[in-house]
Image 1: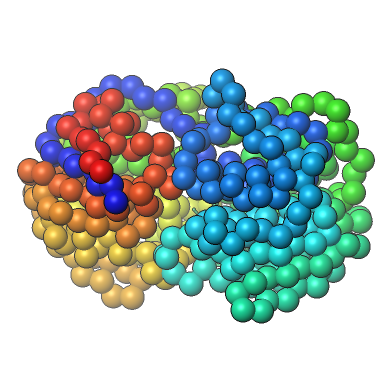
Image 2 (image 1 turned 60 degrees about the horizontal axis):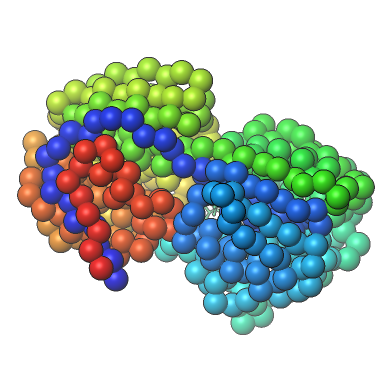
Amino acid sequence: MASIVVSGGRPLRGSIRVSGAKNAALPILAGSLLTKAPVKLENCPRLRDVDNMLAILTELGVEAVWKDGALELDSSRAHSYVMPQGPSKELRSSIFMLGSLLGRFGHAVCTHPGGCEIGHRPIDLHIKGLTMLGADVRETHGVIVCDGENLTAADIHLDYPSVGATENIIMAAVGAEGETLIHNAAREPEIEDLQTFLNAQGHEISGAGSSTVRIVGKRPVRDDVVVEHRIMPDRIVAGTLLCGAAITGGEITLTGTAPAHLGSIIAKLREAGCQISARAQSIRLSAPERPGEIKLIETLPYPGFPTDMQAQFFALCCVAKGTSVIVENVFENRFKHGAELQRMGAIFTQKDRTIIIRGVEKLTGARVTAKDLRGGAALTIAGLAAEGETVVENAEFIDRGYERLEEMFLALGADIRREG
Ligand code: UD1
């Protein structure tokens, strides 16, 4: 197992380009099955989750190669709708494959998805939506079997705006006769990116980014023109880097980012006393020597504060002047980083989904363990500000969602390295 070793105390300074978004790339990779035309994806991050998704696609007969930094895919010879067990279990997002396999083949066989253990992560909304399109979905011994050769459009009301369910239903509805409407759809910008990609294939989808998405199924699509798409910038990577600068009293500029997607994150960083200016594709942050308290952070579906930034702000609040409160509304078991931060001297109390943090002047370096992706990033950020050396074990978790997080912080002047 690899570790990240940080010696804290150096303010982050400089400029860095933000990578492409994992949470856009994964459903888009699944969506590449919905065309037989060659696909070229620019700005696709090279991550462990992406590798796992490519391993799944390759088993199904998709050809995938990295060429000059772009990912080229050809699914014209895809022949199987049975997902391989190994990589599927590694990756929660393999659930997207249900919709795209149904859309392409009318059948899908998938094992129950894996991913970070950050709560229940049920898939009832996905299954309900696919069933409403006419798919017959059965689950036995952890294997999900879907059949739906003649899917038909439906009016689907989601009980909760689930990101994955919205994306899955969109991809299945592409293969359903007629016009499907998804009401109470998730509004995350990654869904808009998926829409752009699928429309570039010739499909007809509108409304992504709003709470009603419309999909006209069975559009005639061409397969003789290359489908080119540039993956949107990762708003969580951007937020993580900004938190790193905020916790160290640093000053950084992010380029290749989309400040419009970072509204709730920027608002909370300002509350902590950071000065932030944003242009079309760049953000500059200048942090006070010590962050101020943040009265209340409540995670919510987009455009609310993202649950994927909760852990990093938890770390920030640990050294803030005063008392901050965080409420995790999206996932019920997403505070595992708390116990690790305590080893570094963090002071907080927890009641159910609420954390009350009393900021201390300094955290102290310690040996800690990443329990999930964003929690691991939070421990690394805490290490940037701590006195002495912090070792974050299980760095593989962090690699699921960051292209070498330690190298990004190193480029901004941190004393950080990987071991193992
Ligand atoms: C996506 C993101 C993840 C982010 C999350 C919330 C990807 C690859 N992952 O995950 O990084 O943390 O959105 O913004 O894009 N739920 C149900 N039943 C379902 C589906 C979801 O009850 O069938 C619940 C979940 O338990 C959770 C909430 O809905 O409480 C949000 O889940 P969802 O939006 O589906 O998240 P993911 O798509 O898994």
